[in-house]
Image (tube, rainbow, N blue to C red):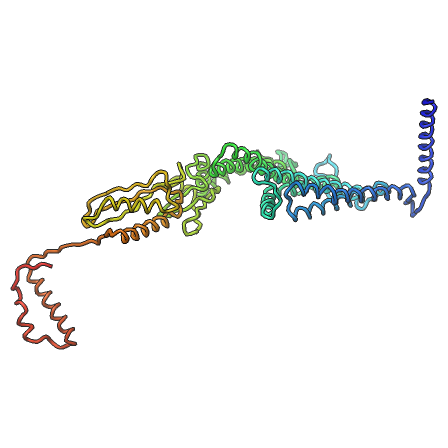
Length: 529
């Protein structure tokens, strides 16, 4: 019985398949349109309709289902959401156009002509060709470029973002996520460069020669030794963008994880990233020149004399460049260090560039310091070993003051300031018995190196206030001056008294009685002032 029913199922399936094939053959034979040999059958229209239904369903699935699910798990900014929707719709529409062209077997040639003669006697000329298939390939290339751009960039951004922040989708998180996305903007131009190279290869424009490298033989003939083509230029751009993307991935993803695990300070991170950047760009320039069609050996040989002349003329510039590399290797000065340079300018190192270092002073003024100055001159680095330093504030008190009370007041003022470290403890030194005062000094540690003058000012304010409250006197300098003999001095004093008398009398001379009371000139041999 089972075999009988199994045989019936097989027979029914075979019959259904045969019926379906017959119907499809009839649809293929049913011509709906015939214009100058271009025909459209019902079967083709059915396939086009089926493709439209599938692509519309895919659009609904991606836009309404997959993307909201992904947005619920990852922090994606509104700008990137809109871009993903636009790329999805463009890709699906382009796929629909490609499917229609393939179903209808449309491959019209629009342009097919030679645009350049052969570069050599045995080479073919350069043809420029545009067909429907060329447009299809261009659409496929740019669809893949857009999709891979979205996937790679989103993957890199989300990985980078997870390594730095949480993925809770708040407004602040989304704005920071947009900022982190700027680090990987090289993905899009790189993918577009590859798509452009594919299109140029298909149209024939990749072989169009911009420049011929020629060489004259001993027989007087000129031969072509190399060429620079459109394809070489686009390939060179693609190589540069790839190296840039690789550099971003290395510094932000690979080294970023290492920095966090090893707790590498900011200055060391900057130095390592800079050295890797210089190395990648030097290699990148050589690869770009090679990809563009230049002969590097001939280029360096021909430019040797020119480079010597440039080196002599730009000696100081090259000195700064080499010093910049030395600074990054030695790390005597790093980004974030507080340094004191010429003219007692104190500031924070914000950037160490190829030729100059950027220092931001206490007054928020940017100073560009040549790298050679940081190596060839004395530079005080306040934060090279530790991010704290010791500072001094001096004060004098009157003789007879309670020195224990002075010490207590100074320590209390330092302990009350929030930006003075409690460890190491502040200390008070009795420096000396001065000419007018007992000299003390409060010594303290602080991490606020750049704004230390504000802290010193606060300490002085606190000392003055506490001394007034506790009755401790801050003396002013006093001098006892003894002058011996000298009739000239008596004459000066007499003249000054006479002048004061005229001033008191509003211009009238002194009375004779007052004059008689004055000592005669030279009547005293000594006086005290």
